[in-house]
Image (cartoon, rainbow, N blue to C red):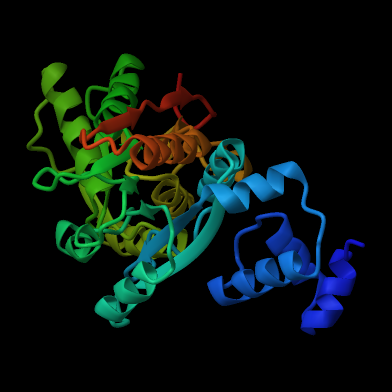
Length: 334
């Protein structure tokens, strides 16, 4: 006679919700608890659905979020988890979620990761540098990196086409008649922002506009940080461009708030376009025009590539880029 999930929870003296999350392959459960529940479920004759059983038998994918200062990645964004979880479920793999913190012992974290007996690792590398990645490269486990790229390292990467996105955004402002386009640039350097800078300056050069202008302003890549930095800038009464490309939507939102406090109208006085197409675009006044990114698909593609490496021992190094698209709001003057 099979045991129910509720009865299994009582035997293990843990919550039914935790047992349910394990049995349904949900992330957010420790490896120790997951193993305990699955082993007990088999011992007591829990009746698995075919899909759940296949997931447990097929293998585990470890999704690692690497956090440095947390300036960019405060938590694992839901859009990443959504895409990764969907990809794992579709392929029949169990998904485990782990956080790596720069201020902790990396070697210890790497050793613990190696002991988890996973089939492959999907590494969210938004804040990751080449130096940070090197300890992961020593693991004898297939790895795919999400949301960043390393020129000097041979690792599979799935990321946004940042250069194209920034180029498109800047060219869009130029097409609306702006001969001077400024840059609200992140004061925190990561690979994505450096590539967006390349795209921005490439667009200026292509359209015959000088890149040696005074309209590039360094702002923190968060709403409050960008707001504070923009207020300090405006207090000195600087020359401002009539239009700006911002490295991300949060910078754009913070700058817009500061500009409005100083009496500037958007888009009548200053037009702004962001990057990411995040949900904040729709709640801003006016709604923010932005380069939207299919981030759930980014996660799915990462899983697909990782499974190909797991199943076929594919040693080819692949770089895949997902193109963003322009999502028009009302922050750019006509």
